[in-house]
Length: 195
Image 1 (cartoon, rainbow, N blue to C red):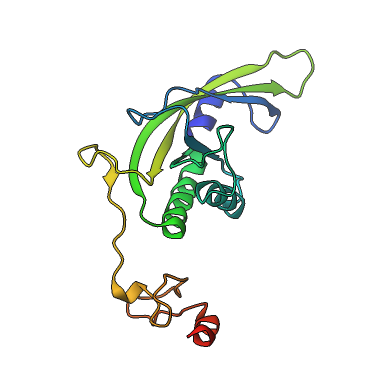
Image 2 (cartoon, rainbow, N blue to C red):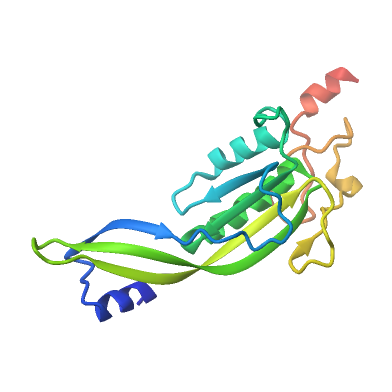
């Protein structure tokens, strides 16, 4: 049984005869110290977010296709998510690190408060506000170096010669599998004709 169901029972809200009218989250400050409010791309990941849409947008902005009002591309991106969106947030950050490459990372776990207003299906009954505390994560990925002494810091991934294409020397998509799996250049056809 979830914490929300326990709290709803204690406040006499039956989830079968009630419906959620609204849900608001406490939008406290980001737990990463020294994060500038401008020049950072904020990506809010929710339970129903599509990973490919989030990554397509974030990758385009970081690689210069989408510029802000000052005409510059962001050098940092922050992925945040809470509740059931935490695992999807981590997945987005990990895929993004592999796509862009050379990114420093700082991750912070924290809790945030969620307020839900439930309305009874019977007319005349007053609604109930339920307040819960859910886990949340904030992941900063930066092209610029970050403080390595900061708890939650991860340096950029270092590439080995096995990660590079033998034909063109570039880094391309690699097949999933055990570390001994053969690396495959997705542009091998193109590379063989240009040399």
